Length: 236
Image 1 (cartoon, rainbow, N blue to C red):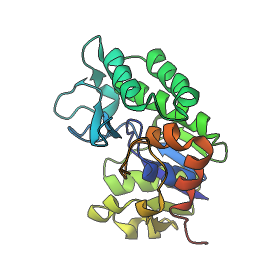
Image 2 (cartoon, helix red, strand yellow):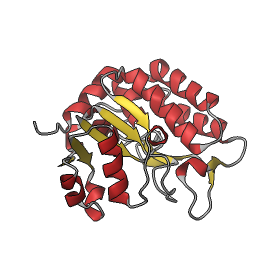
Image 3 (tube, one colour):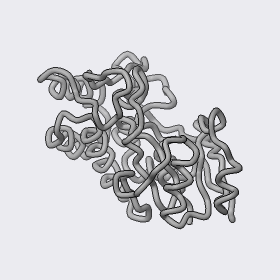
């Protein structure tokens, strides 16, 4: 069984989605430290002038806060964020089909950042029709270690994993030997963004954007296909 684990990102890009789709079980790791100016509360989209821009949830966050302890700042962030999305994508061919459920997830969430991210992530998974992957939150899994590698090994072992998909950032900290001792093979994701090309509204294609850019421009079926095919794990 193949497991992947990742911190919550706000409306993540297709490389994140590829990791989810390449797994039997995907674990939502919301109990780790929040990173300022990272993807946990923002994502990249394309504006009306064909330029990449950040779509950001303003947050209250203190040093050493966990992701699930961070809250959105202010009372008007939903309206502002929604206006920005509508201005950038209202002419996209699948906007009317896909935006309502994502917008509803934003409206129904609390101001807790993890709730916002999980709600919008779930809405995107539903739009894409993803049913082959079990999604679990780390809160459902008992762990004891604070060591980054050992915590991942504990999670994988508790799920009965035989393979773990690691992203390129794992090269900076992952102790592969700990996985090997637990009988778990580490597979390095080699996501190729050059294989994710589709027609965007505007004149220029901007790569590496949020999953909503794919949903609004290419539609759920094509977005799912592109994300899945950009990298496939090697056979066991």
